[in-house]
Amino acid sequence: MSFAHTIANRRYTFGSLRELLAKATPLRSGDVLAGIAAESAEERVAAQFALADLPLAHFLSEQVVPYEDDEVTRLIVDTHNAGAFAPVRSFTVGELRDWLLSDEATLERLAALGPGFTPEMVAAVSKLMRVQDLIAAAAKIRVVTRFRTTVGLPGRLSARLQPNHPTDSPAGIAASILDGLLLGSGDAVIGVNPAGDGVEVTAQLLRMMDTLRERFRIPVQSCVLAHITTQMAALAHDAPVDLLFQSIAGTEAANRSFGVNLALLTEAHEAGQALKRGAVCVDGQIGSNILYFETGQGSALSANAHYGAGGLGVDQQTLEARAYAVARHFRPMLVNTVVGFIGPEYLYDGKQILRAGLEDHFCGKLLGLPMGCDVCYTNHAEADQDDMDTLLTLLGVAGVNYIMGVPGADDVMLNYQSTSFHDALYLRRVLGLRPAPEFEAWMEGDGFGRLALEARHPERLLTV
Image: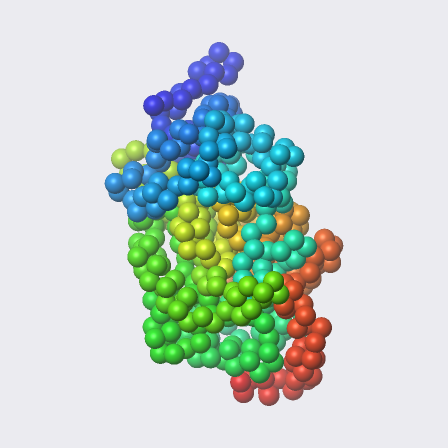
């Protein structure tokens, strides 16, 4: 099936849903690199007009990645909730955009519709939205998850404490953890990206963080962001595993490049659930969301897994939304779009990074995911910290669940620029937001006071 729209007596035709979605995407360097971007602003507008008139139901009959070739497509199709989709089945993509911005799109209705949307539907509607639309619609949606803290409640903003170290020094990591806790970060997770991927280092860091947590009775969850098989091996050696982490993508081939598939993720999810390490949270529910996923636009293209060989590839933003279908299946605690991390080959400058971050946040939340964002850029991108301040503030207005807390906003191990503990304080202060309730109560109690006293003698902390 083809799609068409005429502008100024010129008729633009798009030969497939895959091509239509690619040509309708706001400009970004990754799609130009893949050879699938619109050739002019006029062609992009024509594609957006054609996309706006496309019935949502069409997405159930045409797949951008073949069903028989890809387990992510099979997951999307086989788990689609037709009952949840029924209220908007007659809508076009353009009508869905208008409805999302209307007063009829309430928190309750959006939550009920989430299981009925496919990732391609939400990617499509995001392509018709300006920045304020992405913010206004996402701000209506709350997705709440629990482990030892409750993340995503209205009026709250959490932070992942990211205490990375270039040699995985426990002393250096502990110092960064101390710094972050004293500045109010860590209520989303204390998550270390290890420089190596060994089981011994992973288990050592998990034990160090868990001992610190128990010593000061801190209501946090920890994670070492090694490969998920490494974390499972540490778990098998009785390491105190809270959240299990993995990077994921929107095609089976891209996930294969990460060394994972749906079966492995299912095995890890079941192993983590069996530990039952979650706590009773403020609402009386026991925390049971135990997976932490990271994604990023361009990951499939960088792995040559965007289905571009022998035909028109899938655009990177649609593939990013498909990664959220994988995440949604496992009811994760946290999902984090690492928006500018891959580099300018995929998101060239601050403008493209800003747009992508807001798209990812909107699409993930509309699909029912607890979205956070690593507001970040690499040093060779045409971006700077002012761009990140803008995206950080806009995400706060849009209701992002959490951001990153990196010492000095400069990750000395991964070598990229992110947000700091002070950035989380800024956003909470200007928007009147607070940490997760369990963590906030700890900060006001004796445990935080004892930690602050011990901080005068940091050598004592490093013995944990």
